[in-house]
Image (cartoon, rainbow, N blue to C red; front, side, top):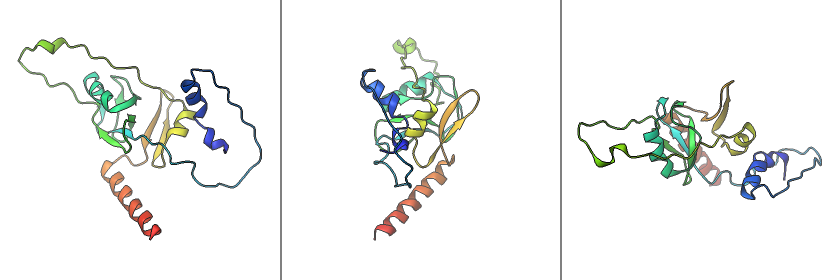
Length: 172
């Protein structure tokens, strides 16, 4: 396994084995690039389609669709930013800044408590192993974020369709 295949693997195996696994690797030699490793991530990503501060109401609704959220309530997000990991394969555009609609009617569940698990904060090493070909890592003094290379969702869809057509043409 090349060294690039081990990026992000250390923390993942430590979590899966509850800290009981020991990982050791040794440099053997420099080799030419031999292509991609595996099939990539089997899980899709939740991608923000709106700009603003995330709300607890929206994130609680999204938590049912994902395995992990990468943002907490009150954090600023923008279109194209990856905010979580989808349960299914394929990326899903979501609105994490949607606010709860206010009405004049009183209801029983007005004071309903919302529970949200803490966000999963990934390190740069974990993000390098987790990111797809169409994503980039944004590093600022205050945060480390994963986002799509193309922020506009329409352009992302057109690029994905053209890439799919190119792959289909190469197979024929």
